[in-house]
Image 1 (cartoon, rainbow, N blue to C red):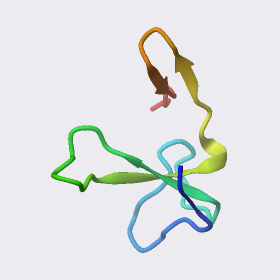
Image 2 (cartoon, rainbow, N blue to C red):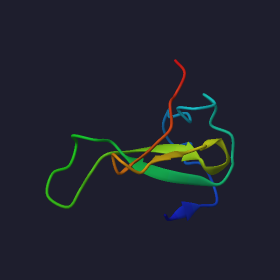
Image 3 (tube, one colour):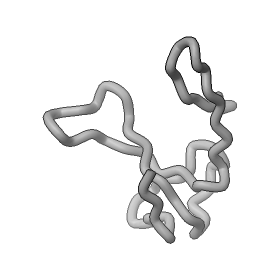
Length: 67
């Protein structure tokens, strides 16, 4: 997974987990259903906010987000 040293604050995006745009190490995660050819929309997430679980029977890596 490629990481970025800073959160891109050029828009109004916030991390979907902590709801801030703090300047922390960031990853981009693709948005399902937005792929066109080799391009896909993505959301920024702070790396430290991610707490993933692996579901081996389903072959899924996931994190539940509280809304």
